[in-house]
Image 1 (cartoon, rainbow, N blue to C red):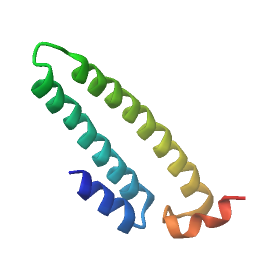
Image 2 (image 1 turned 60 degrees about the horizontal axis):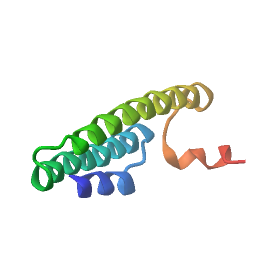
Image 3 (image 1 turned 90 degrees about the vertical axis):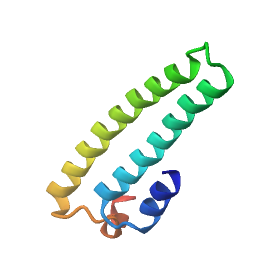
Image 4 (image 1 turned 45 degrees about the vertical axis):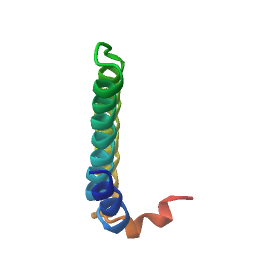
Length: 89
């Protein structure tokens, strides 16, 4: 799952597809938190709490990123990552 996210992040041109790839990578880490918690400390809940915290952070990150994409679309009429270099400065 992590490799699919990294591959999508590196190969996609649309900022929405890049955001979905980042979300896929975050979900892979959440899955790892839950699995390693189950394997190492079956009676504890630390991995699950980290997963819930990470899900909340990724939901907030997605909302902010989509708001930024909407503003970019209003200014540029596209959301391709290739045409956004002039907005750096």
